[in-house]
Length: 145
Image 1 (cartoon, one colour):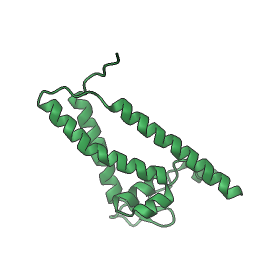
Image 2 (cartoon, one colour; image 1 turned 90 degrees about the horizontal axis):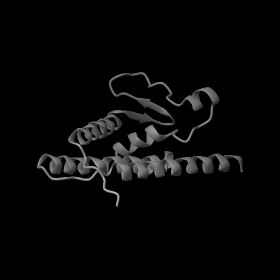
Image 3 (tube, one colour; image 1 turned 120 degrees about the vertical axis):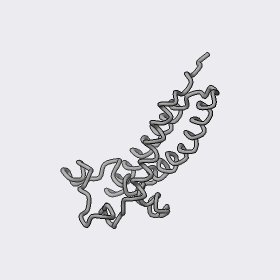
Image 4 (cartoon, one colour; image 1 turned 135 degrees about the vertical axis):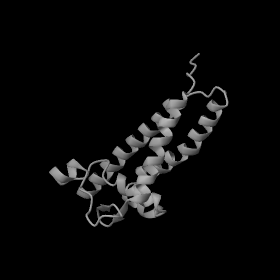
């Protein structure tokens, strides 16, 4: 029988910091169509982060992920889904992990054992990565039809 090791408080805290930083960054950044991402306090756009786009002039499976996170954080879910559907789902999955991690921290802090769910969460994120690649391939194929 496979028994998972209990979650360590340091792991839970690290996840919480990462998740809150990601949501905060998405909320602070601004998206200006078609591809511009800006920090609100500077007047310069952030540089293009996709090397495939910059060097080869083509989108990669992750193109639009940042923009979908930003739009999702600003409540523009329809636009986010139009830009990168799997990324929008991933954003809300990661947001849902914040209260889950808080619950884990509470349970661990009160002396209760709390089994690790990291393997399940990583599997879900890998599935979203697979869907993202499939979505990208379908998008690329439809451009040639």
